[in-house]
Length: 179
Image 1 (cartoon, helix red, strand yellow):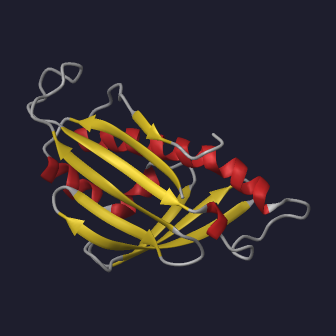
Image 2 (image 1 turned 135 degrees about the vertical axis):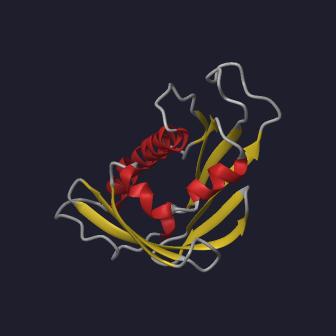
Image 3 (image 1 turned 180 degrees about the vertical axis):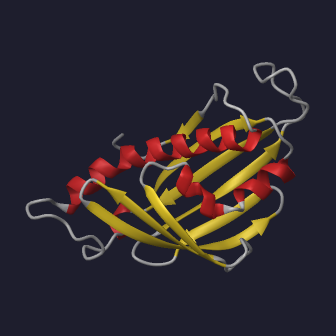
């Protein structure tokens, strides 16, 4: 399994961060390649999302499902079909506000986005590839884009959730092999 794990500090307590993260349809505003989200449910376990992605000449709809939640600290999800992938959002309270955050911050949480996926589990028929384009080439090109997207989404969420733009220190804990 390949893994992507990024995190950052948000100037809010875990409950406020969690309420924001559970509102998944807004994520399309943060991503360069996520073009639409439809939802069936309220964010609790069993909620299903259809995520429409577009990159280069390819488009794909990922069908995901919330598998478990532990408010206000965790949202677990998985891809329901086509390939093996799962992940979670975790919100860890911090005992003190780190010194690099704005002076008016009175609480802070570390937000983690972690994704595991098996690139070998992707079936050859899920993408309509242009002639002479191999699936291996697509996988090699997409891995770094997935990392960039994770970084972009987390950074934009911080600006939206805090209601202001600031320099966000994003920690990249883990990336897939070959990047």
